[in-house]
Length: 134
Image (cartoon, rainbow, N blue to C red; front, side, top):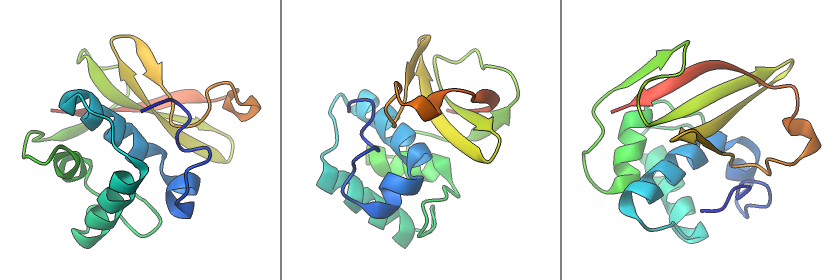
């Protein structure tokens, strides 16, 4: 999937609140070696709500299970939130600035942003925590 997919995404909830969801979807698409279509992403959001792994406002309650739903298999086993960048190759970064939080995907020292990384509002965020999933 391309960076910035969230910016103009056709589903309102995912467009407004879906950064963690999109990071997990990008991770899954890399593992599957196939991108998701917009329709597939919306169906995954609906499935995640149905399975109660995320809320109607896209708060991810169980990232392990959501990643497994996206993969179509039980591959991920556990999640750990840490304060320093993990030694693992792929992880999710949680950033904050006053009044805002945002998630990015880090893989082999490259950053994937579900919002346009060149947007003016991207400035001022600092990493607060990291999500390891294995």
